[in-house]
Image (cartoon, rainbow, N blue to C red; front, side, top):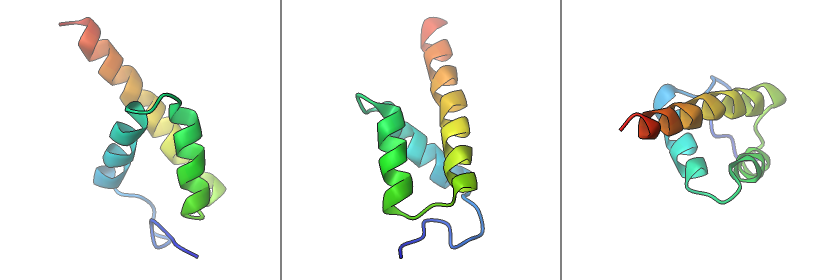
Length: 67
């Protein structure tokens, strides 16, 4: 079993990298779901990534809209 977090939670740098990668996909939600399964993330870790990435991607879209 591969673990992305070693059971200690994901750090900000890791979450940011994941969210940037998700934002480049046609289906970010599917990307995050596949990643969570591939790395055997817990339900809490998976939910944390989805929540943080939703906020990250919304912030990116808002920033682009303000330019």
